[in-house]
Image (cartoon, rainbow, N blue to C red; front, side):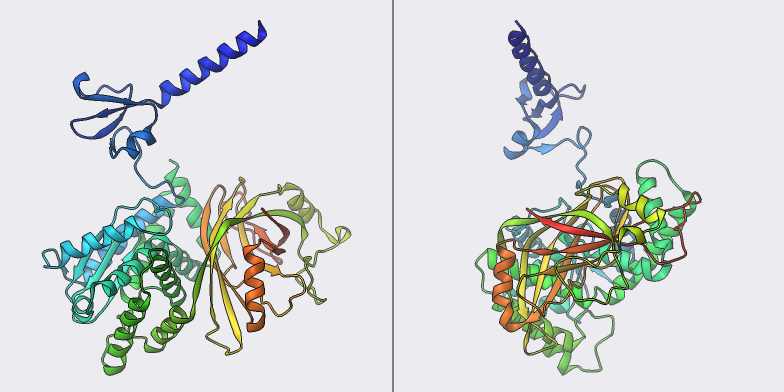
Amino acid sequence: MKRLWLILFVILTQVIIFSQNKVVVNTKTGRIHQSGVLHLPDSLYQKEYGFKDLAVSDGFELCRACFDSRPDIYDYDLEKQLTTQSIIAIKNRNEIMYEHERLEFLSEMMSSVLNRWPEPLKGYSYRLQIIRDDSPNALAIAGGNLYLTTGLIDMVENDKELEAVIAHEIAHVERRHTLRSFKVFQEKQLGARAIILLMATLAAASGNPNVEALSQMTKLLAEYSTVLAVKGYSRELEMEADMFAQLYFQENELNKRNLLTVFDRLATYSSTRLGYIPETNAFSDHPSIRVRIKRVKDGSFYTLPEPIIIKLAPVGILNTRWNGPITDQPPIMKKRDLSKKEKRIIESVENNFISIRIDRFFKAPSINSISKTELFLLGSIKNNVSNHYTLKGMQLYFPGKSGVTPLSGFTDINIFAGGNAEFIGRLTLWDYLSESVAEEIINKHLLGYVSVSQISLDKEKKIKKGGQVTQIASLITVE
C-alpha cells in the first residue's frame, strides 16, 4: 500500500510540474504565453507545449508580458544604466548616419557573426550604427551597441576585414568590458566608497532604493561614459577582444590573416598621419596596434575538452609578511597567532564559498621578453554564499616547474553575494616551460591557493577601516 501511495504521489507531482510549465503559442503571431493568462488567443490559434524551451526551439518568441526577456546576468540593471549614459555620450559627440548605404549589409553581417559566436550569447539585443567621421574607428558599449565610422568602412578592402572588426566589437560586449572598466574607474574615483555605492545600487534593483546613492551613481555613470566615448577601452581589454575575435575566426575555420590586415591598415594609417590623429581615436596608438598584431599573429587559442572547475576551501589566514620559500601551500598564520576576529572570519567561511571556471586559454610570446611566454586563462568567478568578498590574488603551482609568475589580472576583484564576474588572468613563464605547463592545464593538474578578504560593513554601511585587511588563504580543489 505504501508503495502504491508513493507511485501516486510521484505521478501527481509530475502532473503539477507539467501543468505549471505548460505554455500556449499563438500560432497567428508566433508569441509564447503562459497557460493561465486572459490574453490567450482564440482556441483556433492555440498550440500547447509542455515546456517553454520546446516552443522557443521551434522558432516562437516569448510574450513580453508573460516572461522576463531580460538577460539573466548579474549586475544587469547597473549595466543597463551604463548603456543609457554611454549612448547619450556618444550621440553628443558624433553624427549618427541612420540611412548609410552599407548599414543594412553591416547589420546582416553582425547577425551572421552572432549566430556563429563561439560562446553562448548573454542575450543582449544588438544593433549596429554608423558614425560620420573620416578617421577609422570602432566602438562597442554595453547592451549590444556597435559603432563603426565611415572612415573605417571606406578604408577596408574586403568584407572579411569588416567581419574581423565586428567580431572584435562583439567581444567587447559579450565580455562586458563597459561594466568591467566602469568598476575600475569607480574605484579610482571613490576608493573604498565604490563598494558601498555598488551595494546600494544592488539594493535599489531589489526594491530598496537609496535616493542619495542612486544620484551619486548616475553622476558617476555620466562621467565615465564621457571618458569612454573619448578614450575607449584600456589596452588590456582591447587585447582581450582581439583574442575572442581570433577565437571566432578559429572556431569558424576562417583565415585570421584578415584580423592582421585590418590591424595593419590601422597601424599604417597611424604612422602616415603621426601627430595629426585626434587623441580621441582608439587606433591612434601606433605601438599598441603593433603589439596587438604580434600577439594575434603568434598566439594560439586552446579550448579545454572540459572546463576546469576550481572550488575554494578556506584553510587559514594568509601571512602577508611571509619571507620563506614558495611552495604549493600558502604561507598561513598559525592558529595561536590569530586574533578573535580572524578566528570568527575563518569559522564563518564555508567550503566552496567561491568557484572559478576556466574554459580556455590563449598562449603567445611575451611582449616584454624574448625568452618568455604568456598564458592567458579565461573564465568566470561565482560567489556561492551570502557574504561579500574581494579576491586579492591567485598563485598557481606546477610540480617540478619553477619560474612561473603569480596569476596577474586576478587582483582586487569584488564579487558580491550570489554574484559572478568574468576574468582574464596571465601567467608569465620561461619558453621551455610553455608546452609542459599548457599540458598540465589541459590535464587539470593545478595546485595553488587564492587569497580572499571579506567585505565587512558597520552599522552605518561604511567599510570598516583600520589595520591590515585580513586575507583568507583558500586552497584550490580542481574538478
